[in-house]
Image 1 (cartoon, rainbow, N blue to C red):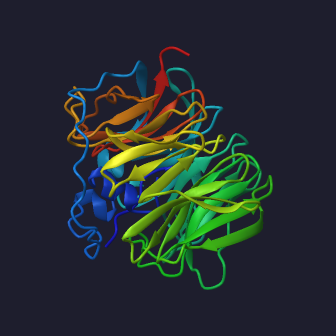
Image 2: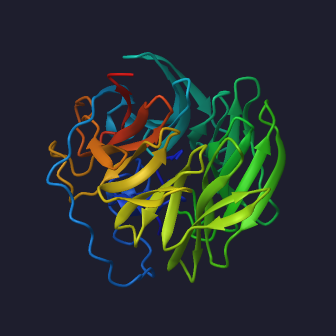
Length: 388
């Protein structure tokens, strides 16, 4: 059994399942295997003794942000999560109008309140869909269920929701990110074990769509020789970033791919979750005991406070703190923002009747707006900087 990935992103986060594994399994939406814990995750994965983690700071300062609720907060029958945001402040994610059912949505917000919410719907006979990423043209990508497998979709205001398509022999796929040129990063699966159980045997995939969302090309990059690979992010120049595993999931290798330059592999055991327009990367390293920021000029910079989920063109990284970090708030884990070597926790979400135990950041835009969700009340959140 493998737990469901939460954005991303999540534009947002490694292939389905990995974020939850890394973040301690507090992050499953209702209906996920993770909703009630993850005792059975990747039973055959044994990387050996992990290295000693670096000593965390005694406590993290709170960033100067305001947390605004996008809705949800009622648990399984009234939940929501935000997984992507563009530079116009348009936000995407999912709501759970009924237990065990996700529906893709988008929100428009002002500086302090939700202006509108649009349900993007689903396709075929399936009743699940989840939006994962949005570009500055308002094109949205994600996945939906056709009743048995996951399928990738693109949504536009003119064309509605369309299936991206998958190569022959690959019944399922997830789409995670889209740039303004219509290039989409994701993963295709030769086998799916059900809507909520995703097999670790995917392949690194990039689609291209036109302005109406009609697919025009697809490129299957495969893996680096192992059983799994996935593209999680793609920047404005068409460079897709993600991770490929070698040796039955024991050797993750972060990579950047482009049509003109092929594959660039990162040194060490790394899992890449996001890329910006300067080819900078965010991800996880050393057996997921530490996050990192990587730049072509300076190489790796450690982020010991938690698990990155996304980064923007100002080199700001967001994610979820390790449960051992003292956030000064009392959450099991908290959303954080990291910049130039310093991490701060984002302020806690608004209170709900059910209440939250943890809260997580999934995406950030170039203005520094951050989106995410809290659990187990399932409240979608946007954090807005108090100073531009």
